[in-house]
Structures are given as structure tokens and as C-alpha cells.
Amino acid sequence: MAGCFELLRRDASSRARRGVLHTAHGDVQTPVFMPVGTRGSVKAVSPRELDELGAQIILGNTYHLFLRPGSELIAEAGGLHRFAAWNKPILTDSGGFQVFSLANLRKLEPDGVRFASHIDGTRFFLGPRESMKIQRDLGSDIVMAFDECTPYPATMEQAAKSVALTTRWETMSREQPLGSHQLRFGIVQGSVYPELRERSARAITALDFDGYAIGGVSVGEPEPEQFKAVEAAEPFLPEDRPRYLMGVGTPRQIYEGVKRGIDMFDCVMPTRLARHGTAFVTGGATLAVKGAKCREDFGPIDEKCSCYACRNFSRAYIRHLLNVNEILGVRLLSIHNIAYFMNLMKEIRQAIADGTFLQYGSTLI
Ligand SMILES: [Zn+2]
Image (cartoon, rainbow, N blue to C red; front, side, top):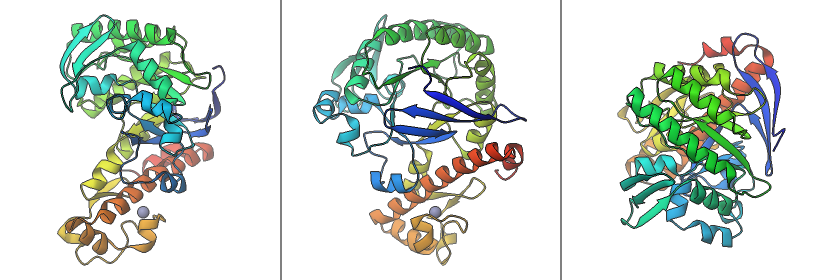
């Protein structure tokens, strides 16, 4: 769909951009962070709460939804939006990343991967055709092309092979039919090799997708390699399409991504850390609410946060809930952590609009 992305402002002192992404379920102000709803639910947080927190778009995982409850059941229910009672935009990944990170007995074939489910060992086949069909069933607003997520570390030879396979699979992905409301994004691979990143970016952008993702990052590589991968691919991505850095990251990594021209991010970190009793606080540091230090701390998780958890509950109370395994403890921390990421992105968008983006960076660790 031409014109799904509008560039509102370019930062004068970096590659940062302020934009808006138009989808069938509403507009998304960028840069944006997408909370992850792996199996059709952002863990422990209801759609109503997500909406109140200002979440603009969430992510669903094709691999998980394909295994359970199955994409045909979701199609029968009217699509993922209706099934999960979320009326705002949804992005679904291709399933490739989970096939490579979770499934067993993987066998690479020219048109996809044969694998055994990590749940019960059932054998399945997933390739570009299957992934596009599943995402068509799910009815997501943004469909990701099926790629091979290059593991880290990979030799240059392995990474080059992976780039070639990704190009083949994404060409097939591009040819599959989708719903008329669905946008389709391509994914750039190339591991830590700048020349491969460039090669992949040139090949994938030639396929003319609605947006582009940089994949194969946040897979265990050192942070400087992640930034280098973005810098190597970004100059070859068209300015008038959204760019998405997959699986990133910490508040600092998100800031560094925005600085290098990225518009979209997703990460399980806010909800995963919440389940481990850890909160993000202003500046991007983490706080072990579960730790002994919070035992008699009757202040909020974060003085500067105005979320429901911080307005009403103390660190001591939430620590108590966590320690006795009361579900509310994880819920409150999840709400707060998502609020933190939503607020971070709001401040980043404001800083780009105000021309203070570089100064804003000094407030983050
Ligand atoms: Zn809060």
C-alpha cells in the first residue's frame, strides 16, 4: 500500500525521525514501541489496560498461534483482533525466528523448514507460503515476510548463504496473496557483516515492501555490533517507508536505534522482567522490587511515573505480593513497565519534535 507512512519531521542532528504509520486499525505515531503479545495476550495485562497505557500497536507471534490454538480457529473467530478483543493495530512476525530458536529437529528445505513442535514433537512445515497464509488468517495489520534469522555467531560464508535464502523466501513471501487491509514488511539480514547487510538491504528493498525490518539482531551479539548492523543497512532503506528493529531492546538501545533512523521496536523485556520482580525506573535503570532493599520502602516504584501501580501502591506492598506469589504483584509491575516504555517513546517523539533529541539522550543510562 503506497503512502502508509508519513514522515513528519527529521531531526537536524541525527538520523532520528518523527512519523505516522497508517494502518487499517488506526494510526501509529512513530518512533513506537510494540508490547509483545506472544500467544495473543500481552502477559498479565488486559487489552483495556494496554489501551489506557497508550499502547498503539501490539505484536503477535505466528509460530505460537499456529501451534495453539491454530490460525484456522482464529480466522473462524473473526481474526486475531476480534479473538483477542484488541481493536488497534497488530503486527505479526513470520514464525521464522521461533522455528529457529524453539523448535526441534529442524530441517532446512528450499521452500521452508520442517520441524518438530517444542510442545509435543508434532511435525510441521513452515515456509513463506504457509507463513503468509497463517498471517492472512490472523488478519494482522502488518505481516512480516518469512526469513531465515541468521544465528550469532555466524561466519561470513554462513551469513552470506542465509542472506541468499532470505532473499529467496522473501521473494516468495511477496508473491502470496494477503487481505486488502494488510501491509507487508521485508526483513534485512546479514549478521555483523556490513557488506552483507548492504547486499541484503538492496535485494529486499528491490522487492518493494510497505516497510522494512532489520532482523538478526538481539540474538546474542555485543551491543556495538547491533548498532553497526543498523548503520550498515539503514542508508539503503527508502526514507518513505517505516523501519523496524526486531527484538530491541533496552531503553538505551531503543534510543540508539531511533538515533540511527529506526521507527519501530518490540521486546519482551518489560513484561518478562516484571515476572522476575524487576521494574524500569526513570533514566532507564532497573530496580529489583523483589529485593530486600524494598522491604520497608513505602514510596512508589517510580516517583516520576503516573501509572496506576505508581499512583496507588508502594514498593513494599508490591514486593510483598511478589514474595507470596500473589498474581497482582506481577500485574502491577507489568503495567508499570509498559507505562515506562510508552512514556519513554512519548518523550523521544516530543524531543524530536522540539529539536532536543540529542540532549534527551543524556537523561538515559
Ligand atoms: Zn508506574
